[in-house]
Image 1 (cartoon, helix red, strand yellow):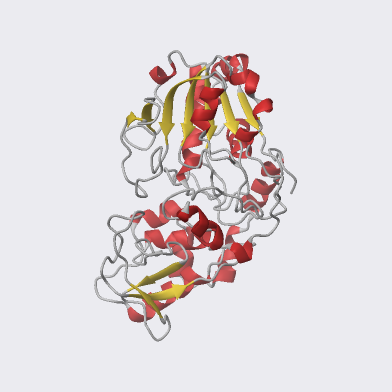
Image 2 (cartoon, helix red, strand yellow; image 1 turned 180 degrees about the vertical axis):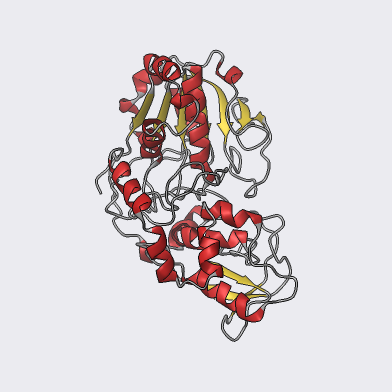
Length: 399
């Protein structure tokens, strides 16, 4: 409960549009009870899969008469304790004894044998609405496997804390990875239910493109999204019970995440190994005259081996703020400092940067001396406008 309290209070000044009638879809039991009673189910879930009273989705489904045969766990694991990018092992839930299969280990997509004796797959995970947040990629793989197996998928929807805007470059062909599979912007403006509808409707995954698989899937029950209550894209969603991942432990961090995560592909830390990951950034080589805030990363529950462990970093601490677009000034400013200093042995870009950016274009814009404003004009192109039009076809909530 202490972490929960910190999580809420850290962003209390920025909780706008909070609606006391909000309910995650899992709490709207009457909307899906007939679909789960007596069924053999696989549940894609983690530590965020909670009802408002704190009951876990898996326990709730069991109480409704469902036979939960397996849990399929995304990045950070079923209980949400693994580091970002850390291999997640198969295992068994100590509370229920239910087998846990990892979707962030040797398998990213469920194997077809996992569906033996499974009548339904249920997905219930709190996402943050950003392309490189891997829970959405996991959903794409699960949906595609469900289509091929002919087993229906039910998405229990939740609000999107970055769902009030859309921004960032569209991912280009050839740059697909676990941190981005589809031609969508960095901030895509979709709940996971809407995202699943778009992935299915646009035929973005291999099995979904196959008409015979789609027919079999549709006959079995297809894709069903149970909407949450009291959410829309016009207000900022800020109702959580637990951090969605170990390093997004404040509402401020969730808001800053789309603007700061590009630093993961550079020699700059986003504050992992500090009390405020994704609410600060820095590096030992950044000039302390310009970047006056300092901190020293150390191992903690969100990062076993943080970048620049034990070294003093100079950077910036970010106050809570509301975004209507990505703030590119952090990245462009830091690159400008690197370009002026040219610190020995420090390359600014690593191989991960282009995966996060979704193309070569952002690196090229930085290297060619483009300003942040010029960069925005580059990526807000016909592809971006087309995405906005396509997105509107799949919205469940007003915008």
